[in-house]
Image (tube, rainbow, N blue to C red; front, side, top):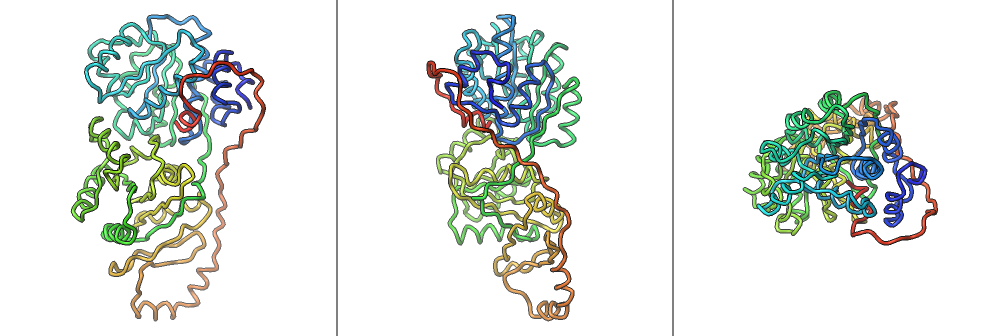
Length: 456
C-alpha cells in the first residue's frame, strides 16, 4: 500500500515524495489510517519497522489540516532517551518541510543553561510538537513552564524501555494533566504484563497492531556456551585472549549485575565501561561518546542500549544471561552485523536458562551451535536441543564419563532420533511493493533521511 492511498494531506505527500518514501511498511499501513480516524492505538513492533513515521505522519497531517490553537502544546511525544528524542526530532524536520506553521522542540536533560532557556521559551509560548524525555518534561512541569490541558495528541515511543528505566510513575503523572479528549498512541517493541497494564491505564478502546518479530540477520554468526555462572568470566577471558576483541557489547538483565561484571572485567585489564539506568544523562552521554570513539573496547549494558542506538561497527554481542524472550534476543544481537558488516553473537546459558534458550531456538527454527568450554573450566550443565539430543559441553572429558556414555550408547541413539514436533512459526512482515510515484519533484527538504525514520 502506498502513502498516496491514505488521506494524508498533500503537504505531507510532497515531503514524502522528495524523501523517496513510496510504499508503507506494515506498521505504517495498519496504524496511519486508524490514527487519522481518531482512534487510540497500541502498536507492538521492533526497531527498524518505521514506527516514527507511523505516528508522526498522521498527526502532522491532522495538525496541518485542523484548527488547533497556536498558543498551546498540541502534541507531546515521549521518548525514553535523549538519543531517540534527537532521532525523532530529525525525522520531524523532514516530514514537516512543507508545513508552514508546524514545528517541534526537543526537550531532554544533560544540557547547559542556554538550552534550558530555549526550551523554556518554546514551552511557555506553545509549540505544535514537543518531543521530550519524561524526567526533563516533569522538571519543566514542576516549575510551571508548560500547560498540557489543551494537548490533542500524546505519544509514548518505546514504552517498554521507559518502564525498564523506571519512568512508569512519571508517565502516569503526566497523563493526569492531559484532557479527556486527547488522542493517545503507544508503541512498544515487546508486550510484557506491565505494558499491558499501562495501556489499560492510558488508552481508551485502543486498536491493537502487532507486527511479528523478524529473525536475526543471516550475517550474524550465532553460538552459545552452556555453562555455570562461575564459568562465564573465564569464557570472556578466553575470548579476549584468542581474539583481542574490540567493539563488543555485553548485555546483562540487571543493572547490579552490569556493575559487578564491569568491575570484574576492569580487574583483569579489560577496557570496559558500564551503561545502566542509574547513570545520569551526562554520564551516559560520556560513556557512549567514548565507546563510539573507540576509547572504550567493551560496553557492559542493560537493555537500555538494546534498541534505538545507532552504532554500525559492533563486532560482537555477548548475552551474559539469556534474554527473557525471542524479541529481546533479536534486539540485542541486532546491534552487530549492521551496515553490511559481519558480526558475532554469543550467549551464555546456565542451568536455569536452558528452557528459556530452547524457546528462543524454537523461534529461530534452528539449533544454535554450542561451543566447547575452554580448557580448565570443567564441564557445563546438560542441554537438550530442539532435536532432543543431550549434550554436556567441555573441551576435555574425563575417561569415566566416556565409559559411561559408551554404556549408554543405545540410549543416546534413541535420544538423537527424537524429533521436535513444535513447528510454531512467526509471521514475517510482508514485503512492500515497488511502485512509481505520481508526484512531480519539488524542492528538496532539509537534511533527514529514510534510514533515520525507519530505524526509529
